[in-house]
Image (cartoon, rainbow, N blue to C red; front, top):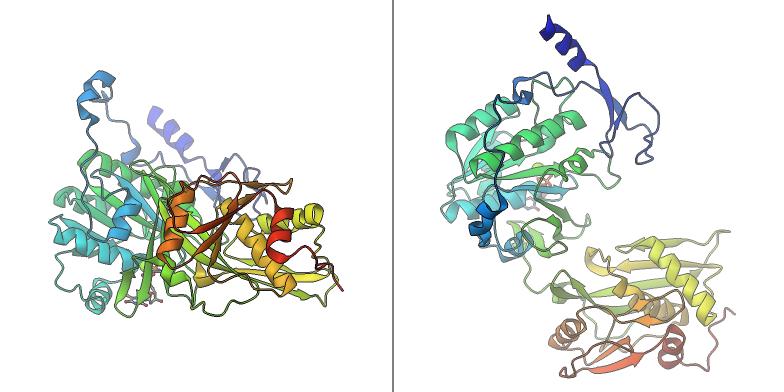
Amino acid sequence: MAGASQDSMAKQSFFSCNACGAVHGKWSGRCDACGEWNTIAEEVPLSTGPSAKTPSGARGTKVSLTDLATAETPPPRTGSGIAELDRVLGGGLVPASAILVGGDPGIGKSTLLLQAGARFAAQGLNTLYISGEEASAQIQMRARRLGLEQAPVRLGAETGLRDILTTLAAEKPDVAIIDSIQTMWTDHVGSAPGSVAQVRAAAHDLTSFAKRNGTAVILVGHVTKDGQIAGPRVVEHMVDTVLYFEGERGHPFRILRAVKNRFGPADEIGVFEMTEGGLRQVENPSALFLPERDTPAPGSVVFAGVEGTRPMLVELQALVAPTPHAQPRRTVVGWDSGRLAMILAVLDARCGISFAGLDVYLNVAGGMKISEPAADLAVAAALLSARKDTALQSDTVVFGEVSLSGGLRPVGQTENRLKEAQKLGFSAAIAPERSKTGGKTGLKVKKITDLKTFVEKIFGAGQSLKQE
Ligand code: TYD
Ligand code: MG
């Protein structure tokens, strides 16, 4: 029978990497695609179930671009009323879009989405929250804790995708929140829930439901720091928008970051604070990441950063101490360790300031993570300040990119950075020479061409920085 041979062909298993989703013909200890060890697992292909069957006479696949000309208007959006969330979404929720909200377990994804769901429901959107992790009673308890027990969000506790799709098809909600994609399983895939094949199949079915029915589908995905439960990496390619919810344990601050957005700018962030009563938005994050700074402290420098379109001042702290080890430590929290190594090398090669034999610690205060190269100069300043045990003026912000030659390169949104610094009571800035300051800020801007000049001007040329 033709059907039988097709079936046995379809049942032939394959191997895929749990970390990056790459598909391999045979098992091996290490994934060639991403280099991770022990991440390859056997899977049974998708094509055995009814949902994989191509409908006969595929309909509606051809549309001329000219037919779409009328659809030029931006997509209609619904704001949640939580400004920090709406900005990250690119101005609100777009119908028929698929959104992945990823983050470490326990960071607050369910809390955020229950609160967001309540707000969308309050705007009149038909909102469904389906949890595969908690029972309805538990979600209700959480809602009570958040003061949302009156919100018209409908709850479901379910993990079977077939039942969920049936519910969605019957209810046709405007918003469907699926918490989490790792708990969903579909019976036409042989592997266990949480495996790449299951996550991929569930995400595929849910995103295509979104496209066909105009429902905005929000998928929650757990991602651990070392990428271990990495199903969501596979999902990233399927959805329109990928948001990451980040924060350090022990710090109440949470940052929602758009890393991909078909309907808005990526790199945009929203800042929240986890409180007893759930997540509260933080409208002025600069004030929050800057601790009391009355007395200037050595090693502490304020960086005038920009995240997305939004300026944000953060404090960088460095500590430099003689090492008891043969190999000195370089420890970084909130910044890139490769970039720190580069700054140390440039300081050594271009300014003759060596950190050999010294442990170096660098910390971004408040649990913030910075990825901008614009922080280079501020990092260098913090390192020098710690190394020399000399505090920088506490009314000064620093920003600029350091090149390998030791030169300083101007960075984007200079005016935006200066304005924010002025708003928060700073009176001076140190910036690269060719920075476009626009001239209208009340800040005194010291413009500097290279790192060597920076060391001389700010930390004094006379004193030697060489180790005693
Ligand atoms: P949760 O939303 O369950 O995280 P995730 O879905 O990402 O796994 O959040 C869990 C943490 O948040 C938990 O440690 C308790 C804390 N929390 C608060 O501090 N305040 C609150 O109002 C709520 C609901 C949770
Ligand atoms: Mg959760």
